[in-house]
Length: 322
Image (cartoon, rainbow, N blue to C red; front, side, top):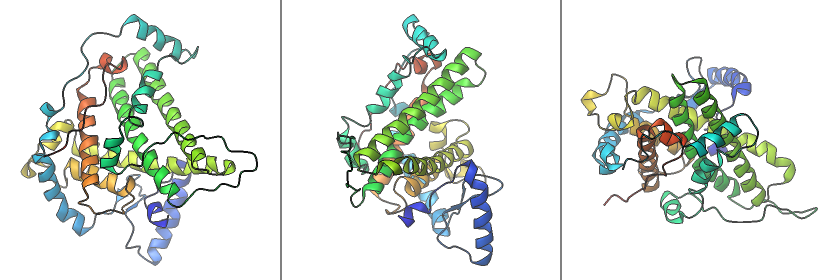
């Protein structure tokens, strides 16, 4: 819908044209509903309102008081042991493109968030992932039902959050590592994004999207997801240079000048993208999704290199806040 598309972020090939056109139109008539813009300084230049700025300190205090967002509340996983020979051999074979027998263990990790977690999805108002045939009969006249695109978009965002978590971890590991580890990390992030878009294609086929439209719809989804990832990257880079848990524990007086706090910015990015800005800022599902993502980020930051690359971990649980 037009409301969701106001949050759309164009990819590099279209960004310059979009920015130029938007800049020209904004000079003629300011858009009061604009949530973000493309500027020379940053890809996603969020247009905070006075209401946002007034709400952020209250949200920061609420998240800081949530016992689920302390470093000690996320149980440590993995160990310091090096990769075993089986995993190393599989990684070697996959890096040299003799077959992919390594990244499947990470695909299973992502799939775990699609199947068998209906209660969590219901709490977060993420549409359930149903098993449905993606094969359409010849000359099928089936068309997507009402609300289909919004459902698939939200499911895509849910998948993307987990791919993003894995991508951010491998990116952090690459710094200062050997060529071998760098190649392995590059393989992981490439294969996981390919896996994500194959899943999205399956969702679109299952939603009776016409075959000739699937490629265009996938591109559309990629642009939405790009905007979310950039917004999250910026939030963590600017608000959490010393780590997620440290940023969440900061008092208001400890925030650097011009900073709003990590959790409020993550929450805003999820509100504007996953929920298309269509729910209240104090909605329970929005708050819970923010807590969920922050807890997973704390876990990722705590993992040792080989524990991550060997996938000796699973997603941390999401307990309710009584």
